[in-house]
Image 1 (spheres, one colour):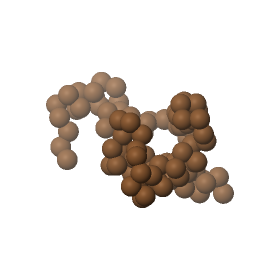
Image 2: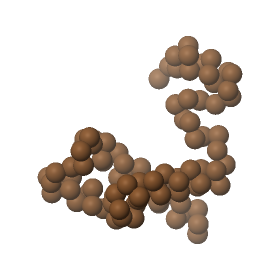
Image 3: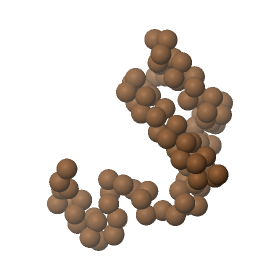
Length: 94
């Protein structure tokens, strides 16, 4: 997909692609950001991130009521992202 003129200017000025905002981070910086996001989510929902993802997966699969303001597509994307990050992180840890 072609980038817009604005995206091209941002890439030129900032040296990074706005469509991939975390691409420039080191593994440690990315880990710190992910941990901070997980802490905020866990505080909001009152459970660990992995448990929350499983609860969301169960709710979507069972046709239960979803959290207010979230669509099935957003929830499935969150689940896939979490599992992808968890899988990648466990692979790198080995």
